[in-house]
View (tube, rainbow, N blue to C red):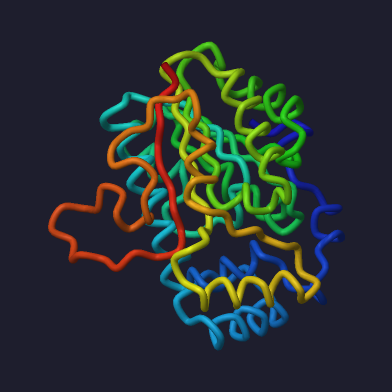
Length: 271
C-alpha cells in the first residue's frame, strides 16, 4: 500500500512548522508520546496549568477508541476501518487493536497534518494478512477521501468510520454534520460510525482553557454540546449506552468507576 497517495516524502518534513504549536503534536505530548517539539510542550504545559484534567481527557479518548475498535472487530465482525483525522501514532492505533483480534483487518488512515504524514510509515505497518494505507487529505474533501480509501477497502462491504476528535476542527456544526452524512452515505448497511469529541456543559475550567487555546493563534478546536455530538448519529441505530462521557462507554469489566470527563462519544450502526 505504497503508492503516491499514501507514501510520505521529503516535502512532508519541509512543511512542518516547529515555531507554532500544533494540536496533533500537543495531543501526542499529553498521551506521553515523543513526536512533538518544545513549542508543543510549552503550549501543552500552559494548557495543563489552567486545566490539568486535559491529560485525563486525552487518555480517556484513547481508551474509548480501543474499546470501540475491540467491539467492532470482536462483536460486530467489522474488518474494514476508515479512520479520518487519525493524528500521530501512539499506542493502540486502530490497526494495532483491530489486527490483534483479526489480522486480516484493513485500515485506511486519513489526515493532512505534515507531522502525521512524516510518520505515516509507522502507521503503514500491517499484519501480513491485512493492510493499512494512509491518505493525505483534508476532512472536508470527502470525495478524495472516499476515492483513495476505495483503493484499499471494499466500500461495498461494512466499514467502520472513525472520527475521533476531528469534527471539533470543523468550525460550522452544520458543515461537520454534512461531512459525516456524505461519508456514511457512501458506506453500505451494516457499517458503523464512531465519533468522540470535546463537549460543552461539563467542566467550565476546561471550556476556559480551550477558549484561551483557540485565541492563541493555534488551529481552533470547537467544543460542542452533547446534543450536537448526538446529532452526528441521526438516521443510524445508536448502540447502548448512547452518547456518553467516554469513560462511561462500556468500561472494561472490573475497572474502577470513572468520573465523567468533558469528552463525549458513541457508536452507531447503519441500518
